[in-house]
Amino acid sequence: VCVEVSDLRKRFERMTARGEARDPRSFEQFMDQEKKEEEIFHIEEASRRADVIINNDETLADLHAAIKESVERGEIPVLSN
Image (cartoon, rainbow, N blue to C red; front, side):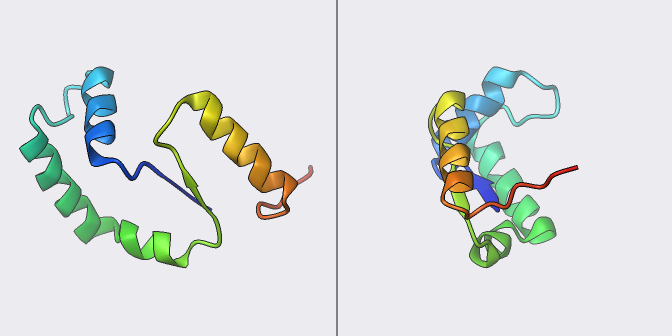
């Protein structure tokens, strides 16, 4: 399962709203960071290999609903203890 925010501007806005000292201050810095992280973590490759991709461009409630729908469709297995 891969949860992703595909809208780069939205990701940047969320990051700046978070206000962490380590976060980029400009969109240009954000894009540089994105490139470096892709080189290290190969995020695009992980997305291509994922059986399920859940988009997180909207609200937290929308994300929860998308996860629930994927579970209900059997796309995401539910682990029991």
